[in-house]
Length: 364
Image (cartoon, rainbow, N blue to C red; front, side):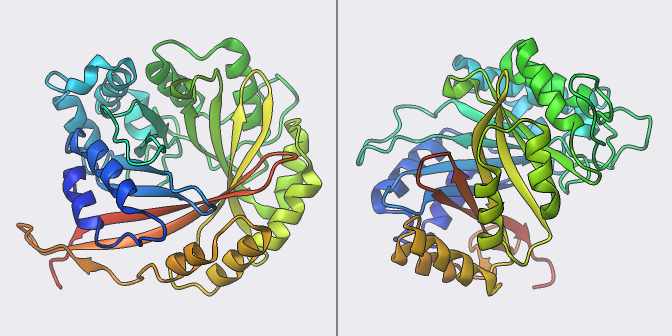
């Protein structure tokens, strides 16, 4: 269901633990949410697990619930459109909602991240420029009916490895990726970035998937963040195949210590003219899974997570909460994901994403 983000954040204020979201951070979230159109189906708050109190706001638009149409319909009267990045997101949504576009079936959902100020109680002076994160895997829930082979937007589960620059095994989602980036950048991605990105996709192992692509222009960088998923056992060989410049031994140790009982993983790579050394490992279990305690204990031992923030995540409720005062009986489902940010010769950084999703509960 589509809801006003400011209302969702107001209700979520009672749910978000103070150890992770301070009163000043709540105020920044509310100020950013107040200027957003009612187009999102859920929201998440990004929290740092170390000493920083900074938070960022993320909202998700889905094709299945018409988030793209909701935002595109309001593009003419949105004050946001004075900001070029928001105008590009509106143009992306308008084309995404067009059944004749490859985006229509090829993009199930779009996350928009709003980077908020972190200097004390200062509020955003306006809604920040969005950091757009489209999902380009049509098998992910949230999209329209999946396309069949040969139709626009169809993509296989993953590509086979190919030789450098030969395009062998490139998924058929290449057109979707290029069009999405061109709309969100306002022009095609630079040729060097385009080539490096598609080589990373071409060299995915069998069963590997390109999940998201996100232009980093709003953060002042000529690069694209690529999220991929694959069997954990395939990660070291894949990183070597794409000439990732970090320490593969470090990543093997991180995988062994943080997700020892997991068979598949998702991780973020930054791709400019070449693959960059940053790697962000996603960790996501069901809320009540006992593995959370083990993972968080290890982060505390590494100094990447404060003990009170560990306790706040473990106390994050597994049961849906009622959202009173709605026209239909509505519940709020809560979820959590961690991201571990690896940079060579730098301490490991840990972030938590606290998600809140409303849904109509017709049968209680």
